[in-house]
Image 1 (cartoon, rainbow, N blue to C red):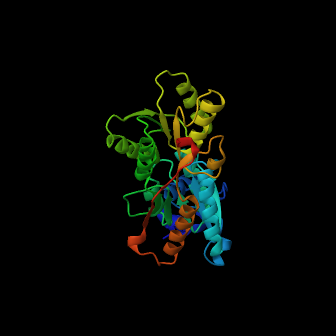
Image 2 (image 1 turned 120 degrees about the vertical axis):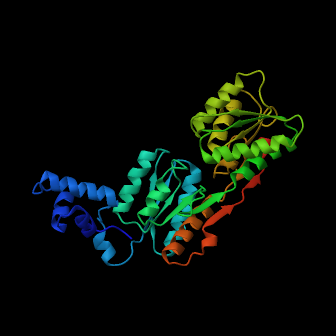
Image 3 (image 1 turned 90 degrees about the vertical axis):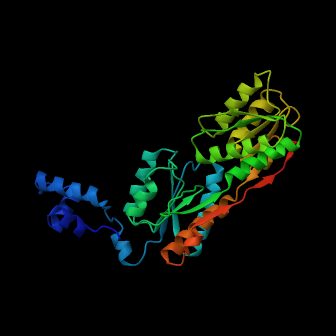
Length: 332
């Protein structure tokens, strides 16, 4: 249940008017009383209700969606799916991009809670952080998007990334490739770790195959281009690369084919991940592992609305989709 201003007043041993004066920055409150009010606010997790007038007319009709990078076409597609599903029930989606920064994420969460959103859809900046329990203790309905958790405090919508990594590398091995490199992005990212685990399992199934891991500090076109430039200078190049997302794969294509004269797929076969909208339109059409991004967003909203209506069966709180291999020219 949401903490009210009267709860803060009772905890601090002051009047509701005193709490209001502190919240509004008025100087009529003694320093000692103001300190007790601020301590009570922190202890109870009170969030000021700037949307009270709206809520008096009924439940809030807005949903918060916070993703890692709204510039990534995958998350843009997730947002499209969420907006379309929310609109069916008369809701709007408020979008935030954390950039993978936990402090930035918390700022968004606090701001959206002040707006009294009906619930939160979140791809957490820190997968095993305390944000799930923090929101659960505040009574905020939550769905984790493109993430998994063993906690029963949140619903989840995700894709089996271990299977996706296995699909990608098994396909390359089936083309006769044996020297596989994974351009992986940050290895601390759960999705990257799972995709790499799937890749390792595929390599372990084929005699004579070997796997090399190339970590990057980001999952962007520029990071992929830098990895491609480094590969271009090597004499012991792999004969196939699995990129942990399509942005990395696009950067690799640029560095290898447009700048380096390396033939894809003849010299190096390439597979990406996400199957973003322009994967089929790259200089060499990109083989990729398709995630149902819009369906992820729509399903997350559906789970949230069913929570709000009390219609969600506990057995339906975790939804996991299977990825799909989409073969194009880049893998031969």
